[in-house]
Amino acid sequence: MTNASASPQETARSCLAIVLAAGEGTRMRSGRSKVLHEIANRSMLGHVLAAVQDAGATAVAVVVGPDSEMVAAEATRHADGAEIFVQRERLGTGHAVLMARDALQREENDVIIVYADTPLVSTVTLAQLREPLARGAAVVSLGFEARDPTGYGRLILEDDELVDIREHKDASEAEREITLCNGGLMALRGDVALAILDKIGNANAKGEYYLTDAVAIARQQGHRAAVVVVPEEEVHGVNDRAQLADAERMIQGRLRKAAMVSGVTLVAPETVFFSHDTRLGGDVLVEPHVVFGPGVTVDTGAVIHSFSHLEGAHIAAQAAIGPFARLRPGAEIGVKAKVGNFVEIKNAVVGEGAKVNHLTYVGDAGIGAGANIGAGAITCNYDGFSKYRTEIGQGAFVGSNVSLVAPIRIGAGAFVGSGSVVTEDVPDGALALGRGRQVTKAGWATAFREAALAAKKK
Image (tube, rainbow, N blue to C red; front, side):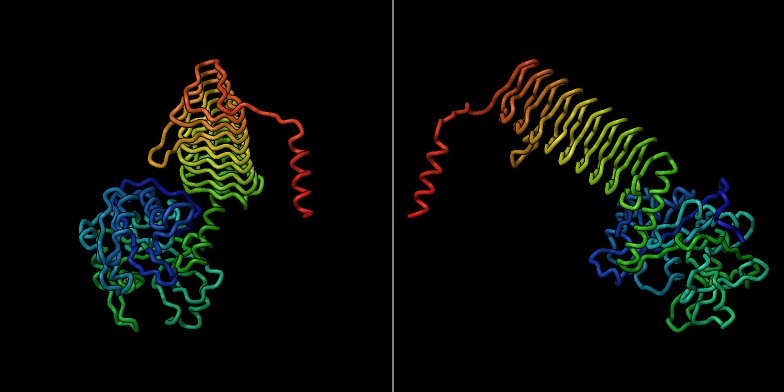
């Protein structure tokens, strides 16, 4: 028996990964395939494909159901060169694996079989699933110690060697006391894989071909079977929305722990949500209730204040974001720059030390180092048909409630007076005013109130 806490061994053995993604997923109650549903902003299929490739798979075969073009497209997007095979009749897991017969016939050294709806399996576990094959085992099953084994297949061991997998309904009373259960994932030695798989029959109540029969068949053929034991979380399957939410909770726990171990401070970890690809530098501070969408990198010493939402953004060292800030794709925040409360940045560069502190929208723009953008200022970047760019020079000062109508350039060191609507370029060092002149009428308000009150009494 192999324990998954050990580190995986490097191997030069070739490996075919067969990913089963043909399930209908009716319990999801969804118009799209179950395996396309996401955790940590990546599809379950995407997570599994990333894991098998990181574990050393040299070839990938994905078995999909009929009319599953979107699943096939997702597979090839995440695994360049993946072969797609279609299971037109759903006759069990053994039948599904044999849909990839053309790939199996190449007899890669190792074959690993994984499920696209088991997205939490780790690269380390998949690498360890292969290790007994290099030592002569023909079949390796992934097992776990179940908190409640009811309904799971039991792994039957004799002298620490796997001899069979017994389905719960077929297990004796003594076998039902076993808590070591079948996690579903399996590895086979490539030179004997087809000989074993072709012997799987369907003489059972459902008339299906069960992959679990491979263990007994391998033993009948004189081969050895082994088991690798992992935590139950690793084999968490997703069949409905509740289990999807459980998977999200589990992966967020992993991501939060990894962030803190790497030197990130999470003030209230359970309130922070990461994407699978979030990258945080050392001494980053993340306050409560922050959401990281895909494609966010935060460099050393930056602070992300509460209730901020970031996606597709790069935050440089010692910058400060939020609270209540929104960074959209293309946001580039410079060193020691500040993006404050109720500010939205989209496809824009905020230069080193620049400040965008309050109630502001900056889209399709460049803000020079040390510039200051006042409260309520906006870049008017869209005319209903096309997007236009705003460039604000180094050290410029844009007053409150200013509308900058793009395309436009505000020069280095220039000032734009509060309340202005600016439609023409402003030279370096100039002052721009684009507002009506104030008119004050003495006594007007008093006369207005008296007249209004008199009219109301009539």
